[in-house]
Image 1: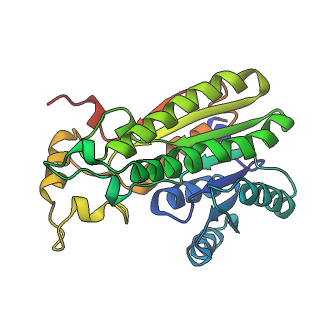
Image 2 (image 1 turned 135 degrees about the vertical axis):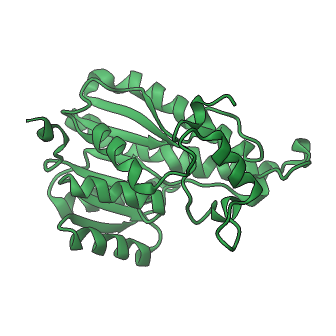
Length: 271
């Protein structure tokens, strides 16, 4: 049956950054499709809330404390998840990431004065912790099993050099490139590697950039809406279909090295 393509009962999914808004929504979708989901992050409180929500909906989940910038921490998490669910992680979602105010250029700011330390922090957060180290640690186990799906969360900003967020956009472009590299390297070994590039989805870190305190759009928020053919921001739940499709070894068995854009048409609009 067609619906069987999207059943994930045999999968163990690790969602790094699953304590956040977008990562949490993707964890919910994976659990709803039958996957055993491990929420990885640094906030035990937020992790427990996400696990409780998944279990209340009938899913299976656990929280595992982990630092995506620490290989030893990730290896310990990998082993703990395998012990808890009785089999190794077969789906990895790398949803950790974000920007830093010091690496953002306000209107009229001088790019030549952007601090190197801030640039490096953004690259560490989005490229090293957001893809590189988790792919090395969890990818090693997937290669040993001869199967797996890695889903890196990049950004539409990695395709289009948006104003202000230069370091973030460059780091996400590197995530897309790393995704394609690993897809080529691991394709013959049973591990698929793809990316999802969300457009503008309101979350904690960008809400003030998009909305005024009264709920109206900021100047930048209104500009984005005008450039988006669907004339709205995305809802985190709208990432669920893409992540479940890429996680399923049946539904996307011949898909690797791809960057799936979920942006309401923003990247297709030239007006």
